[in-house]
Length: 583
Ligand code: ADP
Ligand code: MG
Image 1: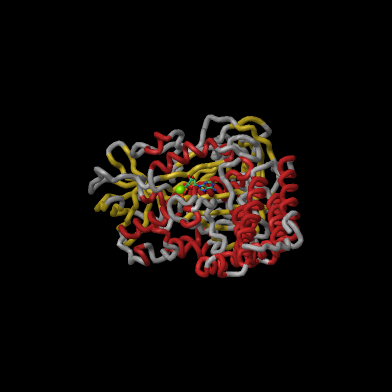
Image 2 (image 1 turned 90 degrees about the vertical axis):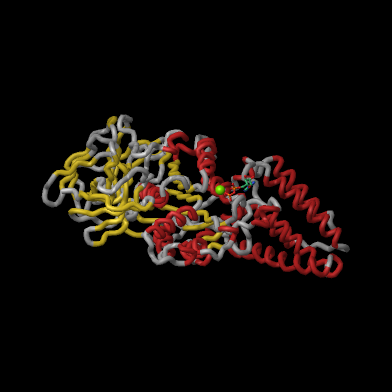
């Protein structure tokens, strides 16, 4: 028996309801408004009163309207067809831009019920299975999409039958399982899962131990992110957060990408709908969208739907992770999500924390970030969710609560700097403030040194020291004047500029420069450090500056030419000449 209720009060999207029966925290309900039903979520229960947050405009709602409780939390529907789809935070299908503004009370089906998928069985009659075990697979694009024992199944089941290879829709029965009591349960290609609960279905979640390549030198070379790791990109408006995330989406070493777009304005969302489908997957030459799910929302969507969107995105990631895939979750910007949390908490008249954010903002953010990770599945294979979120601190103030809380939760920090963006030094990641805590993990150091080069981490640290020293001498030159410091200071300054221009700066809009695989990154860093080790002897600081400008130009050209191609080798020769005719 489902519980029911009567509307007693309304403040914007917050509605109080007199309930009959029992309702649970976070349970979903529908409010009857004329012929339509408005979806809402229970956010507070006290005695016979519940407060529910309506996912839509409450215009026209009045006291006495009836409420039906669903008996479950906000769920996401999982199954083949999630990829290349765009949804709002409640998983309404947004086929076209016009759908971004769905009519009130309209909920669309997330998956296609007519589409036929070619199923190939994996499990067989008599097998013992548990939640998340693979029963069979269908091809979703070119990715093997596993049909799994639903995550909600508890304990062991025996496979009674599995459908033979053939074409089926998502609603067909793919397997019949027997529970410990001998009852039959049917499994289709879809299942539902509450978005705010992490999907289990794995044996172990070890500490990340290997790197996820992004193709972005500033990340991979300087501060790499681990597969199953977490990172965040804070930066003021216009500093390149979105461009950087799109670059990572395109080149990142992941099979599935979930993009949670929490836009400030509708036009930012239009941007994602026009730009993202155009992106080409450099790994396959096909559209990136084929292995992407977009979850998007704008500030004009109701607050609870905005709050839900990042959870919906994360749950989809965990679903693909349980198939043994490498999944990359990008959220742009998580500040909008935090603002939704703030709006909800304020309406509830909860005691506010810093800047009126909820008191437990830090815990909410940490819990969310902790859902990322690399996991070992029941069958011994691994799957991972790597998460990178952007934060847009108001006025670039990194001391505000969302940035501070995220800093505690995420292991990598890629701080975008207004100053670098103004100078068109893209990506505008500050090389000295940014960090990757994974570089402190012994297993990651071993991984890097064994995969890339034996002395790789040492090289990276040397490069960072050169940049650090460059900043110091730049300040001295600035104060004391070009002639007021030894020529060696100029040399140190130019060496840091060399690293900045050749390694740190990267053109996201050039086909070749945008994608730098790890072997190329290793080659370029080694080359740049060789130049830094070269024994120069300059008579004047002008001579020093001219020589380094020449070298920087040659190496920049190399970044734009095909790795180890003819042109690339010509530049290499030029570099050697520039170094040898120097004395
Ligand atoms: P944000 O999302 O932080 O507001 P965007 O990602 O939209 O900023 O970037 C703003 C602009 O900066 C872009 O339109 C682009 O012109 C420039 N830009 C950012 N990153 C790069 C890059 N790596 N290479 C070239 N241009 C860039
Ligand atoms: Mg942006």
